[in-house]
Image (cartoon, rainbow, N blue to C red):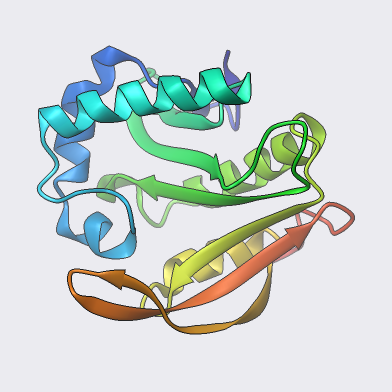
Length: 183
């Protein structure tokens, strides 16, 4: 399955041939620092574990919920996923995403989040989509704001990573709110 975002960006399931790109892109301290579940250093074994997990989750959900973000030439440049829900039963899900550093600041993730929120509402039957963002990640907060998400609160010492307690901001978008709210 392929989900078109723009004429230059689309999403599709992860495939084994993405392994080298995953290892290359995710061995970036900046991506590690801004995400909760991606290990560092990122190894070929971690990529193999990810492929197994993504397949298991898709099988359990009955549909793909983790997507590879791809450039026009189908090269892997990022990832997007829905989490904390059960397809066809839950009314809400959390989103998570990452983008390879060479593609930061180009509006790609904003376009991906908009497209995938429409997918979540229309295809997964969601009524609410949430995202947690570490307080030291303003670019991700801007992506969500451009997509119409509203901040619902500050969660103090909400996550633990590398032995540190981290504050996060909770953002949410409701189905009846415009996904393409002006920035």
